[in-house]
Image (cartoon, rainbow, N blue to C red; front, side, top):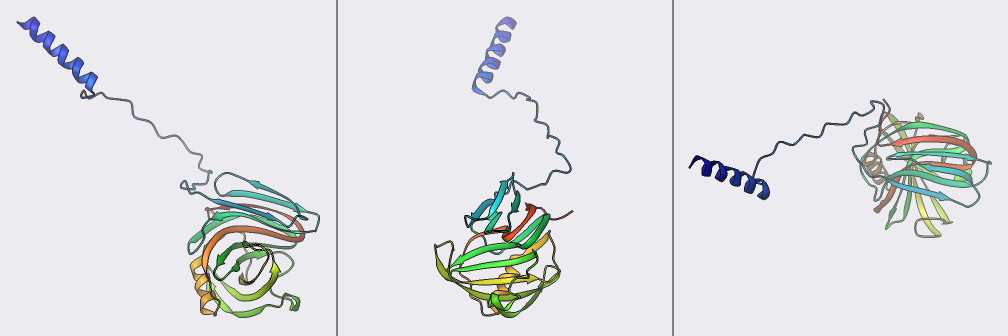
Length: 231
Protein backbone atom coordinates (compact mmCIF):
# COMPACT_ATOMS: atom_id res chain seq x y z
CA UNK A 1 0.00 0.00 0.00
CA UNK A 2 2.84 2.38 0.89
CA UNK A 3 4.51 1.52 -2.42
CA UNK A 4 1.35 2.51 -4.29
CA UNK A 5 1.18 5.83 -2.38
CA UNK A 6 4.80 6.65 -3.30
CA UNK A 7 4.07 5.87 -6.97
CA UNK A 8 0.94 8.07 -6.85
CA UNK A 9 2.90 10.99 -5.40
CA UNK A 10 5.59 10.62 -8.06
CA UNK A 11 3.00 10.58 -10.85
CA UNK A 12 1.29 13.68 -9.39
CA UNK A 13 4.59 15.56 -9.29
CA UNK A 14 5.42 14.63 -12.87
CA UNK A 15 1.95 15.77 -14.00
CA UNK A 16 2.30 19.12 -12.18
CA UNK A 17 5.68 19.74 -13.79
CA UNK A 18 4.32 18.94 -17.24
CA UNK A 19 1.36 21.30 -16.84
CA UNK A 20 3.42 24.12 -15.33
CA UNK A 21 1.69 23.92 -11.94
CA UNK A 22 4.80 23.02 -9.98
CA UNK A 23 6.54 26.06 -8.50
CA UNK A 24 10.17 26.06 -9.58
CA UNK A 25 12.66 28.58 -8.19
CA UNK A 26 14.51 30.17 -11.12
CA UNK A 27 17.59 32.38 -10.80
CA UNK A 28 16.66 36.08 -10.95
CA UNK A 29 18.45 38.36 -13.46
CA UNK A 30 20.96 40.66 -11.82
CA UNK A 31 21.12 44.37 -12.70
CA UNK A 32 23.97 45.21 -15.04
CA UNK A 33 26.50 47.80 -13.88
CA UNK A 34 26.36 51.18 -15.66
CA UNK A 35 29.22 53.58 -16.09
CA UNK A 36 28.53 56.56 -13.82
CA UNK A 37 29.72 58.86 -16.61
CA UNK A 38 27.23 57.44 -19.09
CA UNK A 39 24.29 59.81 -19.77
CA UNK A 40 20.91 58.51 -18.60
CA UNK A 41 18.57 59.14 -21.53
CA UNK A 42 15.65 57.20 -19.96
CA UNK A 43 15.26 55.38 -23.30
CA UNK A 44 13.98 58.56 -24.97
CA UNK A 45 13.66 58.48 -28.74
CA UNK A 46 15.16 61.38 -30.69
CA UNK A 47 14.54 62.76 -34.18
CA UNK A 48 17.58 63.66 -36.29
CA UNK A 49 17.61 66.37 -38.97
CA UNK A 50 20.34 67.54 -41.34
CA UNK A 51 19.94 70.15 -44.10
CA UNK A 52 22.70 71.48 -46.37
CA UNK A 53 22.27 74.10 -49.07
CA UNK A 54 24.65 72.12 -51.26
CA UNK A 55 27.64 74.42 -50.90
CA UNK A 56 28.48 74.09 -47.19
CA UNK A 57 31.41 71.80 -46.41
CA UNK A 58 30.11 70.02 -43.32
CA UNK A 59 30.34 66.62 -41.63
CA UNK A 60 27.40 65.66 -39.44
CA UNK A 61 27.92 62.64 -37.16
CA UNK A 62 24.71 61.21 -35.70
CA UNK A 63 25.66 59.56 -32.41
CA UNK A 64 23.64 57.32 -30.08
CA UNK A 65 20.59 58.61 -28.21
CA UNK A 66 20.72 62.43 -28.12
CA UNK A 67 24.33 62.85 -29.18
CA UNK A 68 25.59 64.47 -32.36
CA UNK A 69 28.68 66.24 -33.66
CA UNK A 70 29.21 68.74 -36.47
CA UNK A 71 32.44 69.91 -38.08
CA UNK A 72 32.30 72.53 -40.84
CA UNK A 73 34.88 74.50 -42.80
CA UNK A 74 35.44 76.56 -45.93
CA UNK A 75 33.61 79.75 -44.86
CA UNK A 76 30.95 79.01 -47.45
CA UNK A 77 27.36 77.85 -47.53
CA UNK A 78 24.56 77.25 -45.02
CA UNK A 79 23.56 74.14 -43.06
CA UNK A 80 21.30 73.23 -40.12
CA UNK A 81 21.85 70.00 -38.16
CA UNK A 82 20.67 68.57 -34.87
CA UNK A 83 18.51 66.21 -32.85
CA UNK A 84 15.20 66.64 -31.08
CA UNK A 85 11.60 65.62 -31.57
CA UNK A 86 8.97 65.26 -34.28
CA UNK A 87 6.56 66.77 -33.63
CA UNK A 88 8.03 69.40 -31.38
CA UNK A 89 6.12 71.78 -29.15
CA UNK A 90 5.98 72.86 -25.52
CA UNK A 91 8.44 70.84 -23.44
CA UNK A 92 11.44 71.16 -21.13
CA UNK A 93 14.62 70.75 -23.18
CA UNK A 94 17.86 69.77 -21.47
CA UNK A 95 21.10 69.84 -23.46
CA UNK A 96 24.84 70.12 -22.96
CA UNK A 97 28.03 70.15 -25.00
CA UNK A 98 30.42 72.47 -26.80
CA UNK A 99 29.86 75.06 -29.52
CA UNK A 100 32.96 76.65 -31.09
CA UNK A 101 32.20 78.67 -34.24
CA UNK A 102 34.52 80.92 -36.22
CA UNK A 103 32.22 83.34 -37.99
CA UNK A 104 28.43 83.40 -38.26
CA UNK A 105 26.72 80.44 -36.57
CA UNK A 106 23.87 79.70 -34.16
CA UNK A 107 23.18 77.19 -31.40
CA UNK A 108 19.45 77.15 -30.83
CA UNK A 109 16.23 75.30 -30.19
CA UNK A 110 15.02 75.37 -33.77
CA UNK A 111 11.77 74.31 -35.37
CA UNK A 112 8.80 74.93 -37.62
CA UNK A 113 5.04 75.31 -37.41
CA UNK A 114 2.47 75.09 -40.19
CA UNK A 115 -0.74 77.10 -40.68
CA UNK A 116 0.91 79.55 -40.42
CA UNK A 117 4.28 78.47 -41.78
CA UNK A 118 6.83 79.75 -39.24
CA UNK A 119 10.53 79.10 -38.72
CA UNK A 120 11.55 79.81 -35.13
CA UNK A 121 14.79 80.05 -33.16
CA UNK A 122 15.36 80.07 -29.41
CA UNK A 123 18.99 81.16 -29.66
CA UNK A 124 21.31 80.02 -26.88
CA UNK A 125 24.61 81.11 -28.43
CA UNK A 126 25.96 82.54 -31.66
CA UNK A 127 29.19 83.42 -33.43
CA UNK A 128 30.36 86.79 -34.74
CA UNK A 129 26.94 88.00 -35.84
CA UNK A 130 24.08 88.55 -33.37
CA UNK A 131 20.87 87.55 -35.16
CA UNK A 132 18.58 90.42 -36.22
CA UNK A 133 21.14 93.03 -35.14
CA UNK A 134 22.07 94.70 -38.44
CA UNK A 135 19.89 96.87 -40.72
CA UNK A 136 20.30 94.35 -43.54
CA UNK A 137 18.52 91.77 -41.36
CA UNK A 138 15.34 93.86 -41.77
CA UNK A 139 14.04 92.57 -38.43
CA UNK A 140 11.64 94.10 -35.91
CA UNK A 141 12.01 93.72 -32.15
CA UNK A 142 8.71 92.80 -30.48
CA UNK A 143 9.78 92.76 -26.84
CA UNK A 144 11.70 90.79 -24.23
CA UNK A 145 11.06 87.81 -21.99
CA UNK A 146 12.98 86.71 -18.88
CA UNK A 147 13.11 82.93 -18.63
CA UNK A 148 15.63 80.13 -18.14
CA UNK A 149 17.94 82.35 -16.11
CA UNK A 150 18.31 85.16 -18.65
CA UNK A 151 16.58 87.83 -20.68
CA UNK A 152 15.77 86.92 -24.28
CA UNK A 153 15.00 89.46 -27.01
CA UNK A 154 11.96 88.73 -29.20
CA UNK A 155 12.38 89.56 -32.89
CA UNK A 156 10.65 88.76 -36.16
CA UNK A 157 11.31 89.12 -39.87
CA UNK A 158 9.95 87.80 -43.16
CA UNK A 159 11.77 85.42 -45.51
CA UNK A 160 10.69 85.70 -49.13
CA UNK A 161 11.01 82.78 -51.55
CA UNK A 162 13.37 80.83 -49.34
CA UNK A 163 13.74 77.09 -48.58
CA UNK A 164 11.25 75.73 -46.05
CA UNK A 165 9.68 72.45 -44.96
CA UNK A 166 7.05 73.12 -47.65
CA UNK A 167 9.51 73.89 -50.44
CA UNK A 168 10.38 77.40 -51.60
CA UNK A 169 8.00 79.75 -49.77
CA UNK A 170 7.50 83.10 -48.07
CA UNK A 171 7.19 82.79 -44.29
CA UNK A 172 7.89 84.51 -40.97
CA UNK A 173 10.86 83.89 -38.73
CA UNK A 174 10.52 84.29 -34.95
CA UNK A 175 13.59 84.75 -32.78
CA UNK A 176 14.07 84.56 -29.00
CA UNK A 177 17.72 85.54 -28.48
CA UNK A 178 19.49 84.94 -25.17
CA UNK A 179 21.45 87.98 -24.01
CA UNK A 180 24.18 85.94 -22.28
CA UNK A 181 25.46 83.07 -24.38
CA UNK A 182 25.65 79.49 -23.17
CA UNK A 183 26.20 76.02 -24.63
CA UNK A 184 24.21 73.94 -22.20
CA UNK A 185 21.24 74.24 -19.88
CA UNK A 186 17.49 73.85 -19.61
CA UNK A 187 15.04 75.58 -21.95
CA UNK A 188 11.31 75.82 -21.22
CA UNK A 189 10.09 76.16 -24.79
CA UNK A 190 6.48 76.85 -23.77
CA UNK A 191 7.55 80.10 -22.10
CA UNK A 192 9.18 81.23 -25.34
CA UNK A 193 6.16 80.22 -27.43
CA UNK A 194 3.88 82.15 -25.08
CA UNK A 195 6.19 85.16 -25.40
CA UNK A 196 5.89 84.97 -29.20
CA UNK A 197 2.09 84.90 -28.98
CA UNK A 198 2.00 87.70 -26.39
CA UNK A 199 4.07 89.80 -28.81
CA UNK A 200 1.46 89.30 -31.54
CA UNK A 201 3.33 86.50 -33.35
CA UNK A 202 0.92 83.71 -34.21
CA UNK A 203 2.13 80.12 -34.09
CA UNK A 204 0.59 77.14 -35.86
CA UNK A 205 0.75 73.37 -35.61
CA UNK A 206 4.16 72.14 -34.51
CA UNK A 207 6.37 70.26 -36.94
CA UNK A 208 9.84 69.05 -35.90
CA UNK A 209 11.97 70.78 -33.23
CA UNK A 210 15.69 70.18 -32.67
CA UNK A 211 18.65 71.46 -30.67
CA UNK A 212 20.36 72.79 -33.76
CA UNK A 213 23.79 73.88 -34.88
CA UNK A 214 23.66 76.21 -37.89
CA UNK A 215 26.59 77.63 -39.82
CA UNK A 216 26.53 80.40 -42.43
CA UNK A 217 29.68 81.14 -44.44
CA UNK A 218 31.82 80.11 -41.48
CA UNK A 219 33.73 77.23 -39.93
CA UNK A 220 33.78 75.55 -36.55
CA UNK A 221 32.83 72.53 -34.50
CA UNK A 222 30.04 71.53 -32.12
CA UNK A 223 29.40 68.45 -29.99
CA UNK A 224 25.93 68.36 -28.42
CA UNK A 225 24.04 65.95 -26.16
CA UNK A 226 20.27 66.45 -26.23
CA UNK A 227 18.34 65.26 -23.18
CA UNK A 228 21.13 65.80 -20.65
CA UNK A 229 21.68 69.03 -18.75
CA UNK A 230 25.20 70.12 -17.82
CA UNK A 231 26.49 68.49 -14.63
